[in-house]
Amino acid sequence: MADLFHALDDETRRLILDELSTRDGQTLFEICTTLTMQHGVTLTRQAVSQHLAVLESAALISTERRGRSKFHYFHPEPLARIAERWPHTRSTP
Image (cartoon, rainbow, N blue to C red; front, side, top):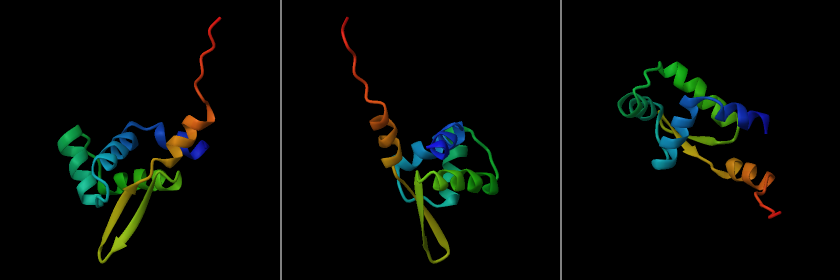
């Protein structure tokens, strides 16, 4: 769980997850372009790659290599486990 919370602690990583949840299967180039054009986040490709590595180590994304391209896919299951861990029930006094 610590990896998951660490991954979610960064705004850029949350933006990457937002974009992958909107359109799954993006390349590094597409993610970098979207961050710049839609969010004004200008990072090097290496910096974005490092963010993607953190997300992958937390099992929030996976990658698939096809030819020279590497595609990134969002996995919401770890987020669901957080919600299951602390069920929200209100008791009335």
